[in-house]
Length: 191
Image (tube, rainbow, N blue to C red):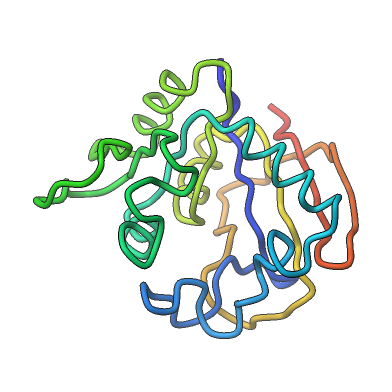
């Protein structure tokens, strides 16, 4: 069965966007460098990490905010964040407009979205896209691994990757690699 993995870039102070993120400013104020390890500042090691993650993705679960900020023209175009890879969008209300078939809108919660994504992914990974989905799935025991790419910047605000938890969650470190652009960290969620 598919593993559920959160794989996100974050500032040293734990933000995945800066303040004032929007469709026009998708990374938020001051957060333009969060993804430089994928592009301008990428080393061969950074590119290998990104390619391995992309090759393993079988489905994506994202929140409505991530969808609204990035879908369509000026964003991902007619596909999702990984082209034709199925995307399950957790939302309170299905949109009235039509969208490309890569998107499935799920109104009965993150658990249902992850179950559907696992079926679509087969033996590949279900990637969590967006902090809100991660914050909902982690305390429910639905996340298998967390991979963070810590960027050397302090944003001081924005969207935090982690939210308050009712109890501690034990992690096992599985990967550490430092490149000039990021500290790449991998953890398995211990159950």
